[in-house]
Length: 65
Image (cartoon, rainbow, N blue to C red; front, side, top):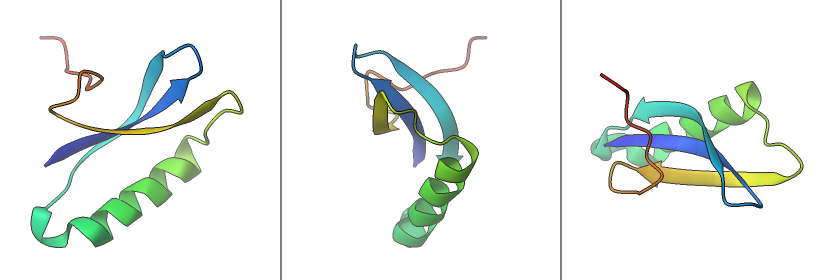
């Protein structure tokens, strides 16, 4: 499962911070590590909160070809 963590700002805008493939068989452990790594490398700004998205989310950022 491909997941992303974004900063979501009060105006509704989001900014993708990190993306990772999570193995469903180990999802809890991998997801925890992903969140910890991302929080360390991309601290959430005061005017934002975390937004976790999967490929099915309208906020998912796809690479431009």
